[in-house]
Image (cartoon, rainbow, N blue to C red):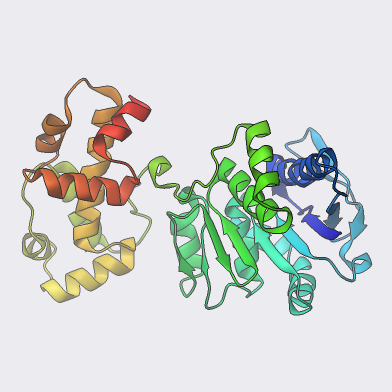
Amino acid sequence: MKDISILVPRGAAALGCIEGAFIGFNRANEVLQKMGKPPLFKVQLVGITREPQVYDKLFTVTPDYSISEVQKTDLIVIPAVNGKMDEVIEVNKEFFPWIVAQHQKGTEVASLCVGTFLLAATGLLEGKKCSTHWMGVDDFRKMFPDIDLVSDKIITDEEGVYSSGGANSFWNLILYLIEKYAGRDVAIICAKIYEIEFDRASQSPFIIFSSQKDHEDDGVKKAQVFIENNFYKKITVEQLAAMSAMGRRTFERRFKKATSNTVIEYMQRVKIEAAKKSLESSKKNVNEVMYDVGYSDTKAFRTTFKKITGLSPLDYRNKYN
């Protein structure tokens, strides 16, 4: 029997992650029993205290145990949390020594969606890769600049420390853990019951590129605005550096620091975001869209598009138009 401890955080939390993890592991128990096998998971809700937590002013979740009552568990699940992350971390900091102590005893730890912020605050992600919701990427990198964030991944597995991508992709991590503990056949049945796309590895098709201007470097902002207004034209790094009154090396260094992208990556992302919107809403063919966003090389456009979105332009259009 594996003890699964789902945290009940203080403050605002994504109720769906708590409920999803709870019913996911319990559903796996039901599947196992129908296969003539004993249930594998003991699922419990764990809070800093046993005090009930109210989410969205409507839903009350009552922990089964407090952290002081749980001496050993096999897996800790950290659900997604909402609000200002520094405040969320502060009100939940009493969890962290307990999580670290459990991990030192061999407990695995999994964060769902932006629960990664709480996981990062424990220090357990030092030297490890992690993922989170693509909307939280910029804030995460500012708060935890030394952690290796792989924002396109649905699942990361780093020596028993797990994370998932955004929103409903937490289900993919739950299925991954069910497969690891109970076997692929059980995980596939659960995936079919909940109609979840199994083995999905990337959240790239869902990412909406934002302009990343939440910084104080006015020279870089000027270049960003120019790129966004002229993405269909041929723009050089030298041109942008001169416009911002910097040498090329200085400009590239400051641009990377401010936006977390190189200049070339940023231009590519702006172009591809424009292409995505066109493919979603217009009747133009792929070549027309390619020319509209400033590409003339078909292979380069398709390669860059797939690198950023995880799909070919045609597959993207078929999926979202």
